[in-house]
Image (cartoon, rainbow, N blue to C red; front, side, top):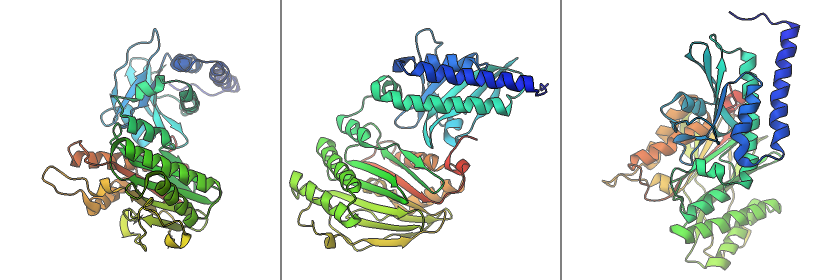
Length: 418
């Protein structure tokens, strides 16, 4: 039976909520990063929670690993594809379930904006579904916990240990350290990307930034494998950021990368790339393609065309430092359009019998998942999983995918909590 809301109960609820926020914010200033799980327990207890557990998603985005602390009860690693917790992560929504007589279990996504970090488990007393207002308060608490995971992750390896299901190669360590957050979104634009294989990637990388009304995006694929490829990609991304932050026009920005790679490695070591920028006011996308697979334009969940353009040589082959050598192409997008940028490891993924995954299959799968209404980061996760399944889990080359989505609409569509 629901309890009538009175001014007195409303004041008590507000006081509990204020106490929870004060506990979390005040104690976090001098908190050791490993103390965050216990702090989340104390903060959620002000709202009536009897148990609280943080789960972080692993690098392959296949499992959710609990963050434990001394004295905490053991928790199992949960599958993203086979659990209610995973469903909360996938669909970016809360799930309130009965545990047993007089208890509820609430699953909430851990989000930084639209970037999915994991889930928060809350056990709270109650036979009936939790009140919407209380779920909202727990959700806001989860958001603050997510922000603390990100900020405190700079000072510790504890969260990294939870996210890694096996050892990561040195090139992969370098690439993941180079990446921006995997997903960023506003009401006007969403950018989402993934690298595979998560623990062994070497020469693939992507980067983005939103500066005013311009969304910048770039995808790089360095020749070769291992440490040399990673060094190439790191130089390419660093030079790209340097030129972007210096305000260089798009062709000069690309020319600067070409020149730096040629000076540092010579013409035998090169990087293919798509470097672009989207005006989020007008929908005009401008890009340079340096020996890279063409971007794919999806509209209404269907492949409209590939954005072919006048080709340029890969970056680093030398002699291309003049901006005229890097022709800039333009395409006007429609509201809701998505651009899919990939490296050749996606196109050329093959089964043991040699058959290719191919762009037709890629477009078909992307269209199917987009039609499901799932958040863009989840579409990206499922796309990468499909590529891995096609190769029975063993990629023959790095496979990177990036979605750029224009004017996607409401916060719910971007992946905010339900």
